Amino acid sequence: MNADAILELVRRQPFAPFVIRLSGGETHEVRHPECIAITKTRVVITDPQEDRIAVCSLMHMTSVDYLQPT
Image 1 (cartoon, rainbow, N blue to C red):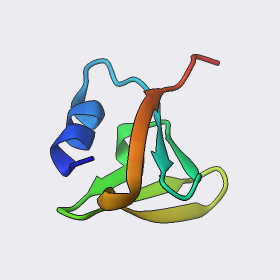
Image 2 (cartoon, rainbow, N blue to C red):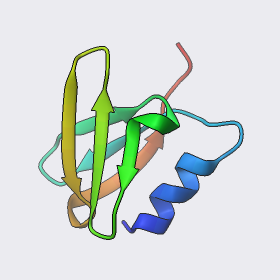
Image 3 (cartoon, rainbow, N blue to C red):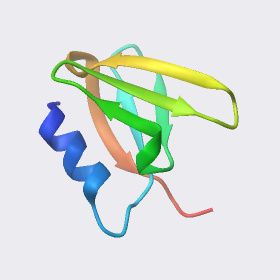
């Protein structure tokens, strides 16, 4: 996975929430474009409702899937 691929998802109009899957089995939901920051090698995902922040290496991202509407 690379930063450009994630940026494309974040900039999509209209925004569609998605989940990032990591090589260790972790998953992180991105429900709003303001809840993610992207650098060259990492992604920071915030979850304001859970008061949680995850810092993920792009190297460990295995897939990205769109979330089903709730």
